[in-house]
Length: 401
Image (cartoon, rainbow, N blue to C red; front, side):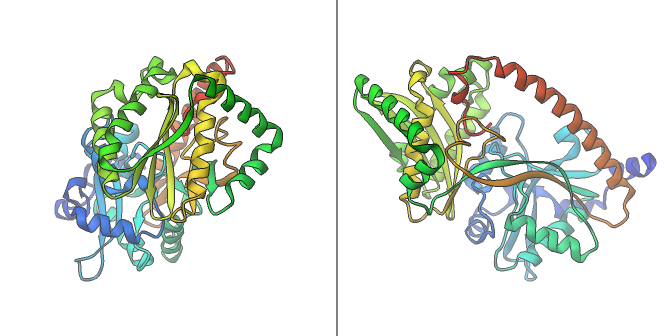
């Protein structure tokens, strides 16, 4: 089977097929891409063109993504789009598979046309085959989401079965509920009373205000405030703040204003007096919001500024009739957002075989499982180390990676 895998990796497909099946992300017509996003069967703010093109252009470790595009029978209407990179580039495994291009946010559900979901899913899988892949690895997809449902239907029809490599449950918000009822049921009267007490103490430093920057002229200064707050905290100390890396800083300064032009991004800020003490970036796609990142001023940590900001964001989203739900894009068991946003949905990494009875898929599956086991062991060690941080610092972790 090793020989089979080596031959498949070396000779994946005729050059003409591979060229037409997988194209540079920048080759996708942006107007077609935006139109598909409007018709997508499942929202994904991280695969909007204004976001993913900026990631692919400069973001550290995420540049030069390709795309599997799916067109309808007339070859004129884009009905599916899956940003991808080779398995070798993703995880240094030399086997013929394509992997979701990571868009910085933890959601890689592909864009599939709600008017033609089966056709779109069929053509996306066929594009992957023609690109020479024996399997697709979809990372961070909503396991029960509409996009994955369409892909499963096509796989079932073709006698193929996806394999879940790993999964977890993360927090979400049902924004159709009354905000105060939702918060009371989530946190309880005693906890809300304590948070109100902390807010009153914040007011001793100046009036507390919650701002939402939406317009292009507002979004630039608000973004710089966010970047300064993020870099001032523990992420800055670890060297993982966006502003600390030129490619990441360029990506976010391009993506946020671009999406703000189409009302698909806003920056929320909590201030006491004139001083910003917490800020977050929120993407919007169709009727869903995505809480990307959070930065706080750790000098105000005893007042729980990240929690205070999230409470205001919850009220803001529940009051917006255009938003039905919000994805925290947070890790599993996140200590800050899980107690506030009590909705849950499953996220996972899925291996999709592209041919029946393919021995190469077994090799890919085994290699990924071995890598995941090693990664999980390392993650547990890191988690134990981080737990030793002072407890008053832990709630400051951002809602997403």
